[in-house]
Image (cartoon, rainbow, N blue to C red; front, side):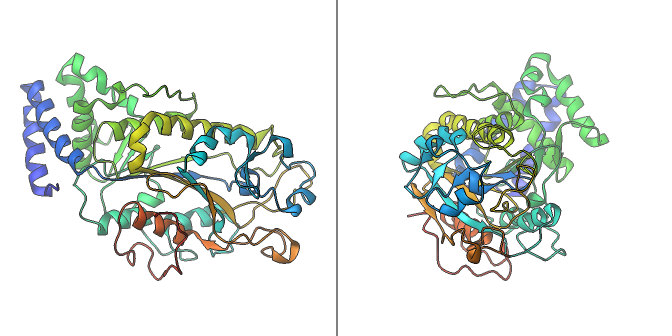
Length: 414
């Protein structure tokens, strides 16, 4: 079911007018709107950006390629610690919590994936991946925002596209409405009921005045709508389900809050979260150390998220991404430098799991990009396009990835 923009704004206006009179009426009005948004339900895509260029070769280890071991004398993951997937590839041991997802067919991996751009600049490569237009700096919007702009069958909820962070990322920038929420708990949504309307009214006023509220919206109207719906739904009151235990990191908190928004049926279609710390030039480590610590956080957050959502994961896909990979050969300081191809994970939804997809080019020197990096054999736009069509049901991606035509499919969805 869809609801027109005019109808929503009319109903939202009624709820706002009632702020000073009857808080119960506000809750009922917002609840009615939330029910309409939730009924549109459908699918959710969670995009997790590993900023800094993750070493895909030690995240998803090509254990069957002898060059991995030859060129990584200090940082190769010990063979006995690897979590084998299919004989050729294995998980870093700090991602062992994801192995049950693989075993039950809820997780696939695309290796040797990346951008056709050869830039080694973090800033440029991230910009290209989020805009969806490699080597084109003139693009003013992100590919996820363009998808929201052109796929109009979804209900008009302010929570359709939400990023967790202090500002809208490049991927969600554009003409379609989107929100950036630094922390759901910062809104004081739960205490608003107990304290009456004053707190909620102050939140509205602070949006008018441009004050810091922990929320960045495309417009004041979108911000007001979001706060009203949060007050009614009270998503932060939803404790983790199914025995899920989240860690104490920022990533874990963001993944928990994405799960809360999904469980609150607020119409979330695209969620975005990023996590840094992947630029491992020095002392990268193997099964212990800098990379291992980051992967431990990643694996724990993803495992808790999928456990928390339980059966709801049938309608949710998590897509990990990073701007590029790292060099095949370790450097002189026990790290890796900016590379080219990397690995990305696709978890949940209708994913045809237990697959490492894409063409593996091998790590032999003659097969490397510029003689040093894992080659890219899958354009990231091919992967993202397949997720949009196979999971979200997108019919036409010409406006989302202009000028790009996928050659065949990866086989992510049945």
